[in-house]
Length: 133
Image (cartoon, rainbow, N blue to C red; front, side):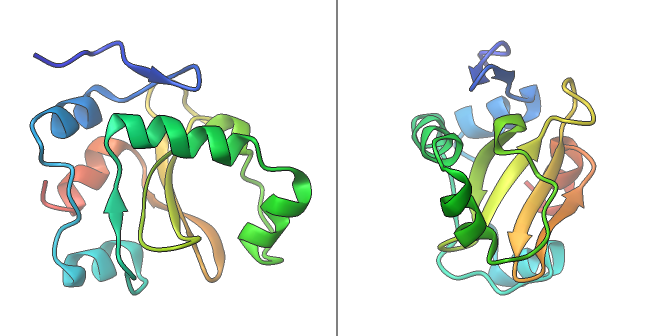
């Protein structure tokens, strides 16, 4: 049974994500699906288990402003790492995150591509549908 009150970095993980991870379905789909959803080419994508999410988020939130600027590559960004939970990546320096700023109860899903951070789904449930999970 899913642990519906799981949190990472003080943010509640969406119940749909908890369920998908616990049943072992939080795995990158075919590259074609990833390209269609993220509009970018994946390079060894990883969808994180809970232990990896915790570890990656500790690293993400510990970045100083210079490290964060290097990650976003000079692209203008209004993303606050303190309000995000990284849940996977499409490759090195290509994180997928939940952005809790606009809706702490139902965060949007964002992705850092070459053109900066962008929304890929208005919620995790919508992302799961797009990825056919």
